[in-house]
Structure formats: structure tokens, C-alpha cells
Amino acid sequence: SLNTKVEAASIPELTISTTASMPLAGGVEIPLLFTFTEEVNQFEFSDVEIQASDGNDTGDLKKASWITTDNITWTVNYIAPEKQDKNITIRVGDNSYESVNTIPGTGDSLVMGVEGVLPTLTKVTFDPLHQEIGENVKVTLEFDKELQEATAMLGENEVSSLTVTANKKVWQGSVQVPDTNELAVGLIVSQYK
Image 1: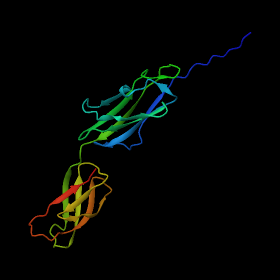
Image 2 (image 1 turned 45 degrees about the vertical axis):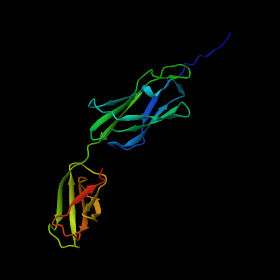
Image 3 (image 1 turned 90 degrees about the horizontal axis):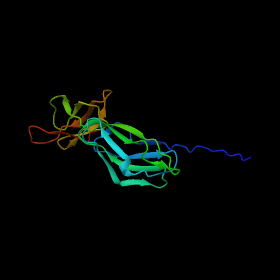
Image 4 (image 1 turned 30 degrees about the vertical axis):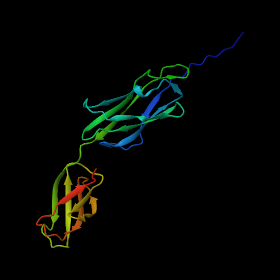
């Protein structure tokens, strides 16, 4: 008699991931990884779907960055939409690729939060309100949402030691009052995210 053992071929599975921290800022470019449990065939750029929670701008996958070296892991760069807050779903459907044994694979999805609406400066406080030229004044900046970083200038002078408080919407620093013959000096807040 002949003893034979037949083993079922495994069903390939997919995990979509990114090394980027969430939520994403608007316009940021991040890598997406598509990692399969085994070598696969017929996985293509067009198999990747992008959906936005509001049904509008989904951002972009950069086709030129689409690459694999082993048919197990693919990478592609994704650019988040700007000036919008939403969730983005990156999805690959079931049966859109197959194993080398022609077994259809299971899909996966990754949901990423995007905070693309820029923060708004809602309040500025100077202490003291009036100060001599060349003297320091404490500056408090309040925003409508939490920030990770910010810089500010009063005229030509940088607001130094600008640091976040326990409330991440409030930043404090000090600045030397610039020597100018202008009656008013502009405060410029930049590089905030």
C-alpha cells in the first residue's frame, strides 16, 4: 500500500503598516509597508485603495516609490491631504493577490488619522504689557489645538525659550523689546505643527 500525506497550501495574509507616528500632519509624506506571510504574485499598485472618512480628498500614493525586492514586502510613499482633519483608510481587498501556489490571499486595512487643519493663534499675552526698549517681556501664546513645536519673532528678535506648558495649547517664552522707531512691532508665529 502507498502512504501519502496531502498538506493544504496556506492562505497568504497581508498586514498594512507604517512607521509614522499618528496622527499625521497635513501634507506629510510617509512610508506604507505591505507585508505578506509568504511570497505572493499579482499584487499591484492598483490593488491599493484609499478612502477618506469625509468622502473627499484622500491624499496620494506616489506610484514612483512602489517597490518590492522579494515579493513578500512592498513599500510605497503616501502623502496626507492638507488643511483637513479626517481619517484615511488604506485597504487591499481579499483575493486581490495570490500565493505562488495560486491560493487567493486575504486583505487588510490601516486607518490613519490626519490633522491637516493648521492651528489658529487665539490669544497673545505680554507681561508686562508695556516695556522699555532692550528689556525682556514674557510672551504667552494660546492656540486652538495642541502643538508639537512653534517659533515666534517680535520684530527682528526671536522669542527665546519658547516652550510648551502642561496645557499643550499654551506656549511661553521671553523676548527683548526691539529698538525701533515704529509705534507698533509685529509678532510673527511660524513653524508650528
